[in-house]
Length: 353
Image 1 (tube, rainbow, N blue to C red):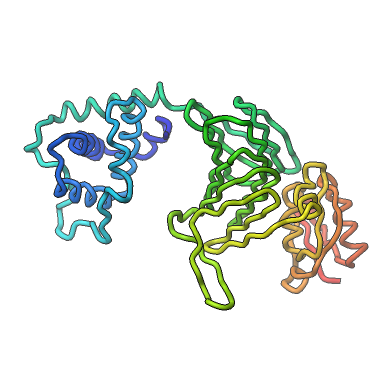
Image 2 (cartoon, rainbow, N blue to C red):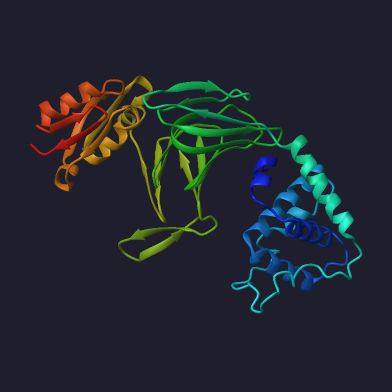
């Protein structure tokens, strides 16, 4: 549930708040018919703030157990989705709002809104934010007993209440040791969500790429565009559709990038390399220089850039300490002949030999 400041930041107008409360009352009544549902769908599609306001208000009521039938009304199977629901006639912005003939008043509608806002103060779970700086790693224990290991330049928001354990990973990398608990444990990112089924797993969110590595147990990975299915290419039959949720067992790895994904099994040695940052080192094996530099930026306060595309693709292998940029640069020069242009102490340029 969104916190009250987030509600206020949406700049929800009084008219939209009134309409959301009125629709909520109508949909919960016995008088609601299919025509009302179609009008409701049109109203939702007119403006993103309509759906936001209605979902937030209905969530408050659902948690208060006052209107238990609201949540099913928002499911895709029950709400009519219209391809083009924007009004086609000028000055009709609110023509699909509930008609004045309904047996509720503006006072009742505003009372619902007021109660909803007040409930945010009481019901909104506490959000804890954890961050690590460049070169910093840390371990923390959550209130449910789960242990999280955060790599450098990682940011996440944690919400644990009586119904769920919810992690919003904004950026970075972490290993999750999930404590046994009946409440769902879900890690959400902009590229997809990972649901733990009693497990230890790693998640790495770097730019537009999401990587999930399962150390123990099983996880379910859903793409950002769920329920749209993932696609995979088969040499014999071309593009086929796979389920929108991928199940990963111990030893498996999944990469999601845009609308594509790769999944494979990893050996013990590969896992050791991928998680070596927990011991203060990173290990590369035949990786392009640009990928090596991108990874090392997590651990170095100096900004490093590659001079040209040819050098960017140079293949690099080696073991590097995460806390010593000088040694990293020296090894690049000694082993690969890469020249370091360090005219600015905070901005380095790597040049071809």
